[in-house]
Length: 121
Image 1 (spheres, rainbow, N blue to C red):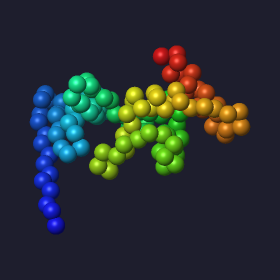
Image 2: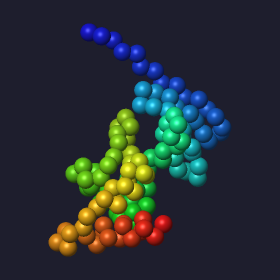
Image 3: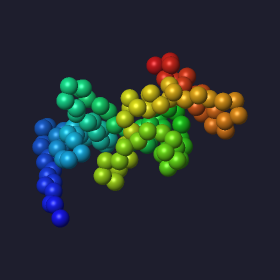
Image 4: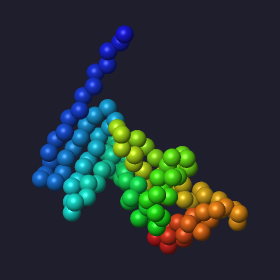
């Protein structure tokens, strides 16, 4: 059996900011106004923002239950960070742009609303 080395390091940057390094990557964590914002730092790519299901629901103007249902059916791009489910904002934007709505689809009004919101921003 081959052993593997696992490490995790958390550095306090400011009173409300932490830098976390582990095998999943480098994470910048901000705690502001009761919210925790998790950002993944990538070399050369800048900062990638990860959202919770609630934040995705707010962003797309859908219910959190709808986002969780899409996640369980693997209809929306998501990532597991430990036991937490997170969504890359850039992937959510691409996912909405790629949606093709047929007139017979049961959630077409919700999806049309998402597309309209993203095009407006």
